[in-house]
Length: 183
Image (cartoon, one colour):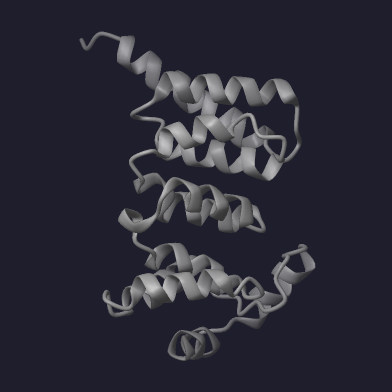
């Protein structure tokens, strides 16, 4: 953990960190690393230590880069549905939700079922997560993605409107392409 934190500190970017703070980032500690830098640091972690380190980083909710790196280190095979849903609910902002869905949750065998089940949650952050997760799965589940996107658009929620519209558009495109005969 200390090695990771030293890497975060060595690569810190004060301009980015200040910009994130002014934009309302919910984190107390922001090093200002960009995603490729966090990916690079995560790749250097010994694979035998990665899952445990991922859990420890996820528990460090005060540090932006810890929560972004954690899903990159966690083992999808060791993540059950209850824990996956709990993590989605714990994600403090869209940025963390996006990384969590892309780096970990989409690899779970129950990802599509979980996304659909959470798409009707009363918490807009959880619904955002369900839509974002389904966005990673739209190629395999275009009908389900379209239905989720359209249902969320009817809610007219400012937080989810953009992702719901993008998901519905992508699903419609996939379905149209599947029906269009090749020339």
